[in-house]
Image (cartoon, rainbow, N blue to C red; front, side, top):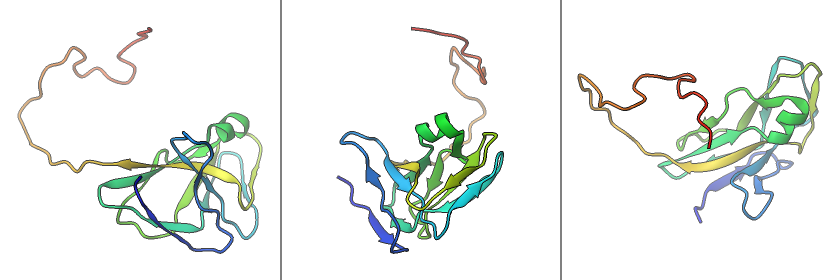
Length: 148
């Protein structure tokens, strides 16, 4: 198991936890002194109350919670959000309210999930043309409605 260093920046912060034995992501909770209201069609930056030190070659992705999206139309404005291995500041979540009603975030509310993933550093080789494929340059829905 990969070890990641974490610092609790606020004594009331909830550290990320796996909700089930085989969950891919850990729940991230809000760390607030007072509730924050996310107005309809607006965003709010919500602190998590901790900072992490990822090993080089890894990133942390913040992702929406499906239940919040389904029930309240709350998701992440930049999903997935990437936390780089060299970032040492507080983890914060940009929530967006796509719904018609204000949404209140309270201290300890689970607002996102985080996944730590390996990333590969690449270098580019500039060429005059790319290899052929069946798909070619078709994109943005070009693959049609293939069903299994």
